[in-house]
Image (cartoon, rainbow, N blue to C red; front, side, top):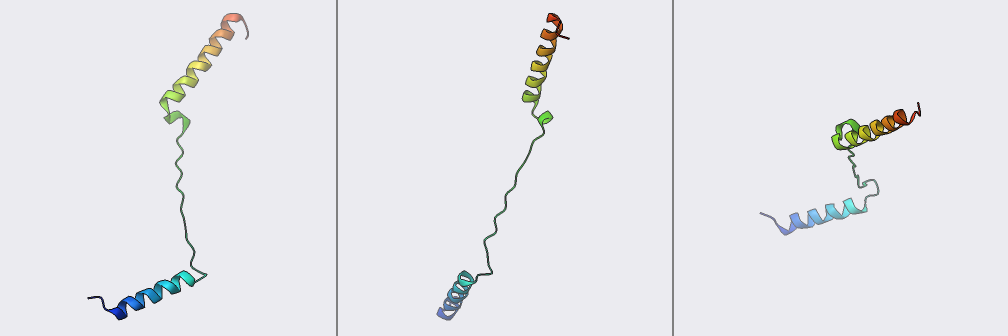
Length: 63
């Protein structure tokens, strides 16, 4: 059962927490990085482009 004294005490504690300079808000950030080889479509595209470049250089005598 919540009494008026309990409510007053809780409000007093809440006010003290808000006025306290030592209590700061902490935020966390979580970043996730995927390796290039795990992105199959991007890895495949890069390999196709490199293979095409190699083929065109080889065919035109660039090497």
